[in-house]
Image 1: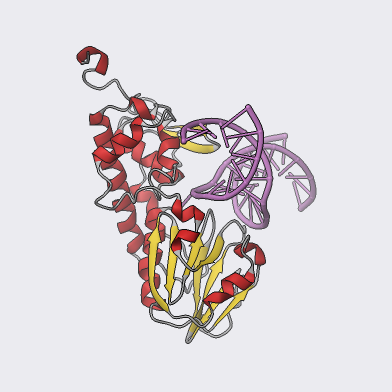
Image 2 (image 1 turned 45 degrees about the horizontal axis):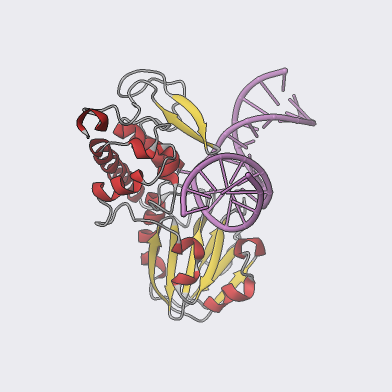
Length: 282
DNA sequence: CCTGCTACCTGATGGC
DNA sequence: TGCCATCAGGTAGCAG
């Protein structure tokens, strides 16, 4: 389920628990979680100290002495902390530390845990585009990327090779905040609209992250998940309800096999803003 | 290169 | 209650 803000909040909270600790043993309970590598590869993490914990897109990365553990939660994955010696829960992979165990849990078995000697060995990581909360991500950069694609805006925002970390929820939300129609084509977005999308992305991610940090993740509670995120959502999950901005009825449509929520009234097709290129251009 | 579609998994939910 | 269809905050792999 997690997108960038959720993974970032997990990173910050987990850092305090596992940084500097040595991984004494690795137990692969469900081999599917480490496919296609296999348990042997993941067990290379055993004996190594956790030097740091980073995030790239939706990947959580544990920096070890001689390599990296890359965790991807896909739809339903999460991490849990077992303070006792015996993690009783249905974890797929368990990393035993000195005073507890870190469990990678995913009942749906779509999430993955991988081990790499170098980050570049991870194909998924290599493909990732810009970090939307980094200084590198500017309105100008976004505009340049938009120009290169004819895909619908919602699909463009979900493309991890352009912007890393936006998922189904925050891409819907960003377009609602920017007032742009999800069917609009990326390459028709005007500079002024690109600035709005850029601002919307940054703001929705910041707001979500703040929400995810307070209260912080509770890895000891197997039922735990981020609460109160609805408070920052403008459209997601609001099919049939009035738009919080203009009162029109929110619609749910399918794009690239995923649900998109949007307001048909106040989310306009791109390109229609002030003067069009045809009117002012050569 | 770009784009779109499907497979991958399991559990929750709602209609009949 | 049972059964079936649909949906779920994601990505890799493949075909065109």
